[in-house]
Amino acid sequence: MNERDFLTKIANRLGRDYATQTVPVRNAFMNTNGSAHVLESPHELTAQFKRELMTLGGEVRLVSDWSAVPTVIQEWLSMLNPRRVGVWGGDFIKEYALTDVLAPYELTVWGRECGVDAYQHVEVSITGCSYAIAETGTIVLMSTPERGRSVAVLPSVHIVLINQDQIRPRMGDVMKNLSAQRTALPSSVHFISGPSRSSDIENDQTIGIHGPAAVFALIVENH
Image (cartoon, rainbow, N blue to C red):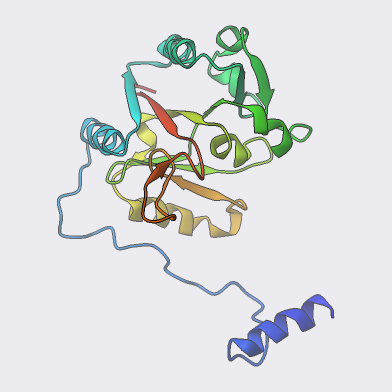
């Protein structure tokens, strides 16, 4: 069965005679003009994001500029004392001036030659993000060849670096942005709201089952 026949068979099961040739337009984002007060100032958004993520069990730290990032990362890594640390590939380490901070640890850098298998022994990961959502304390990651989804999913602890201007008021604001770039979206857009938790078994909540058991967010207020 070729691709055309395969898609036509699916279309038939969905009640259509043929497979569509163009992507259907769907306004798959929420209304962002609700009646509730929408926070707009960076200070308000940052304060709400911090409050919501800490309510979910996350740790949040604010710094005034990027020069303070290595110091906070070093402090957190000293506290966590991991053997192996994982980070995004590309220019991530250089961009955030983490070379000296990461030197004492075994380092796994995501890339074309270092994928999922290498991350099974990583204890702490460090990434940036695409967005953060104030209303829910959520961070949003978009995967690329150098920014694999596994970096933020497999380790026990996830440290995320956030520019203050990446914080949006609501989920709908992020979905609207994603909808506008739907033709260029990556294979994975990952929404993370605090440490992983599950109550699948006998409604007994367990932390760290499907992802990191701890999330640390470092927000830089003036980018």
